[in-house]
Length: 505
Image 1 (cartoon, rainbow, N blue to C red):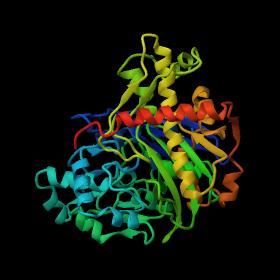
Image 2 (image 1 turned 90 degrees about the vertical axis):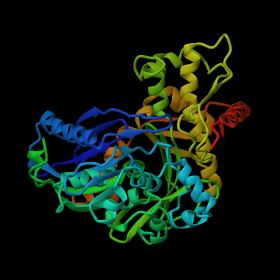
Image 3 (image 1 turned 90 degrees about the horizontal axis):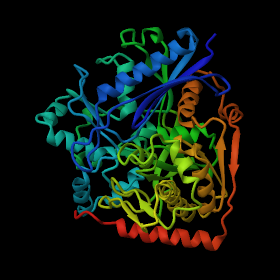
Image 4 (image 1 turned 135 degrees about the vertical axis):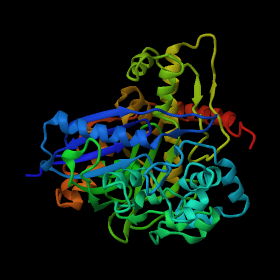
């Protein structure tokens, strides 16, 4: 009997594998971190081969740890860091350059040139996105321009492009010319090359970025059998023949895993970045407040559901910075213990624009700033300011989303690593003035990938059956009065103003 779904959760700092049962509960998991490369200020890269090996090792570890027989795994679902770009030789399977990560700002100049050429309105109309270095298109162009011979090789059909889901599916299904070269609708919608209404690559944008169509993967639904694990995949011999049946960008996976199936349902994920996503149903809505219109998921060929999204570049990464680079804490959970020793941040505001500001500012030239420091500022105040800056950024997104949708957000589902912080969740409820719902299973990103794969093979019947698996762990209600909330947010906006446009284009 096939009793489990294996989810591969390929994130920005680690690769994880989680085994889920039919109740949506985690049975076993494994995780391996990989190296972050910062070759220049504002540049962020990953080694695609290291990502692949870490992901394969995590999957093998889960099967070994759980004692589950491979024949009991009904399918594999993949969720991934989005926008991160890989180009590889389709004959050798070797990348021609490191993966350029979604956080990387090296292509800001390319994007500025396209804005000056008047392409911004067209990009918004077709893709639902804004022109920004965040998305994949300018990264592809940079690699083709900068790696010797790359553009000619791409035109000759020798190179393949993909986001991380594409890279993993291609390798899992054989890593050769017979392997599946696909990209799911959600990841395609983050490339800045994809018409989200027609569900097809846009020829005008391909020409604008000088990207040969031959290197592009085939767009496919988020829930479908793309192929099966090939016998020769290193470390995964036991999983040979298991269907690879779902792929979805991490934020859309979390929306699905949170059972946000109705228009107006919203979730926020506190990961390396922070991502607020609201289901808008079968129709894509263009934002008037610099949010993104994106594909939520596709359950059948040629059909999609849509969402509004606000993206924050630095959230959990700020906690990592406090731990790894400043040495103020020794472990991530320690930030909560430290922050709880003071009632507030003591007037300190941190704007974590380490790689620019995302929605609703979209300032590629903003940089981090810390304001309000006095001689009385302590480690505890800094710890609290770090947690509060995450909540303030989410508040920016919620206000913009409320203006776009015309609805006041009363309830927000949360997930991701930092959502386990009671200090952060309570401040989030306070600064938003709404209820925060934290589920029993905060692994909603991996769960979403598992659910989509399970639907493709009949492991779950429908979304209604999946909804019954979602359960609340705790609700945080607002305990801050409105004048205090308004003044705190006013000061936050002042601080953001000091960080904006810091670097000269």
